[in-house]
Amino acid sequence: MARPALRLALTTTRELETPHGPARAHLRPVDSARGWVVLGHGAGGGVESPDLLGAARAAGEARLSVALVEQPYRVAGRRSPAPAAQLDAAWIAVVEQLELDGPLIVGGRSSGARVACRTAGETGAAAVLCLAFPLHPPGKPEKSRLAELDSVTVPTLVVQGENDPFGTPPPGPNRTVKRIPGSHSLRSAAAVSAPVSEWLERLGW
Image 1 (cartoon, rainbow, N blue to C red):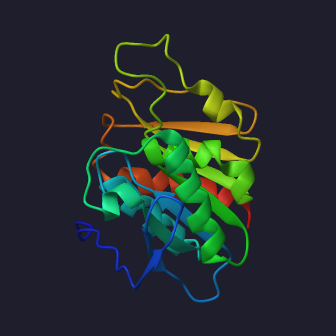
Image 2: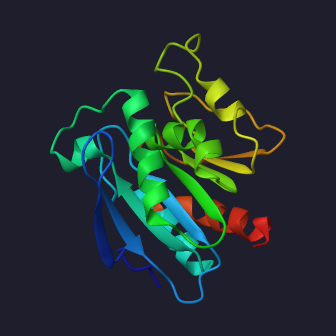
Image 3: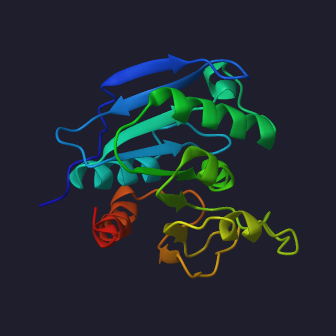
């Protein structure tokens, strides 16, 4: 039987003030949650991209509540992302205000993954989940962003498309890299959900 189309019910929406304008958090709590997964979107996309929904489904099935966070520039209706320092400051402000119980996994897709890596220490993350981490601009491997991943000291999962023009990070001491069919967009929610589920189970929370 074909798997039904994935829909993520955004049960509660909160607007939260940040140093760079209001952000928006879509909360999907589960009963008897073991912790939270907080995910950010890519530079030009929103919180309903297939890979974010696939990760959110895996988290819910693992009894982890989910928060999908819209950065202030998206809430304001802009498509062009804010500078990195503004993204980081807004993200930290959102996580602090949510006051989440239990262990915290932070992450996101592409730009959102970079934000989560850069701020993992300040948000008190117990693990980091990166979807389509943009290792370098297409065709410019010399402009590597691997240092952002290497700065993370907690368990990290990177789910990367096999044909991602932004490159594929290498595994590391605390970093698992799972390549799946696709490019940078990771359009298959099911293909993302499977490795995320396996990784969450290995965390043993």
